Image (cartoon, rainbow, N blue to C red):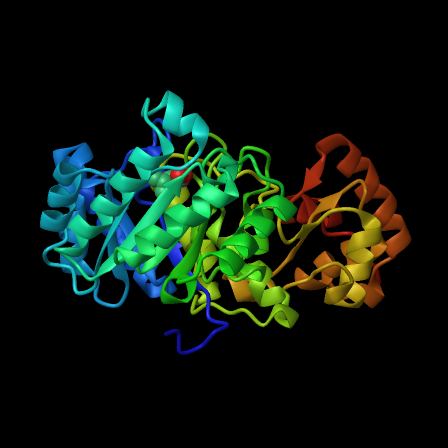
Length: 388
Ligand code: KIV
Ligand code: ZN
């Protein structure tokens, strides 16, 4: 059913799972701006919200459905008719609508969240998919807490919902519990033990409680999943979701995996900034791909290496993620090579400068100021620096 077996579908849930972050709620106009940017980025699916949760969320799903043309617009529901009716209504303007319904699959959730039994939950799952199928063709089923679910039961559940009409089956590690080997093995188990698995796309949805969301998603994709659920900057419940920019760049850098997305990676950095600003969630400086320091080199050894050949200390091009160029930060750890690089950039005729002498003065200033900017260098050089 897939034309290209190595194509990875990117399902962005910034506006649903991501927006669950406390203090980061967005207005509908803000969500529309982000949805438009996600379309330009090239995501395949936008999870626009959970329509039953509030009139505002319902309205956002309606407006996003009207706005975007290429991506599928997806709305979340629990496994009940009221949620599904509401999602179907919210999606009625979508060119490519998808209902994302599901229920807990771990014994923990079955017992302590639903006070139910495996068989009763399996029946509810199937009923929900059949009911949703009455509204739209494209149905994604999520087996919540699949990361901790018993594989044999999970496989039965997945087989039953595919038979009921699910087109995508989402295997969430809801609590970010799994190790990459465990999560990868779970996906492999489903590939090998669910008879009708080829009639659906397997989706990975990983949380970052142990800092393993991206690694787990990658393990899932390597074992046969073909959709990845993620958010810009990895925002989301608790420690967040798989970061879109990390998973996309991991696939791009490791071409030997032969898995590719349709993401226009040059949009990653601007979109990261937009989401951070609108959601009032600063991006940590050392965040992979989009953090302030992701392409900044500050130790003398690294600066020297990167100035000799960029790839000595860079595994990807900053331009590929929308950053103009990597940065050589001037601190007391910098060497002459880095200082020279900045002086040349500022237009100094380096062969007319006593670099050793300037470097000594540079170190004194850098020890006092920690990081030197262009203004500091200009001041350091003063009028007398260009000797002769
Ligand atoms: O983490 C999770 O299990 C979810 C589902 C609702 C898809 O976000
Ligand atoms: Zn989630």
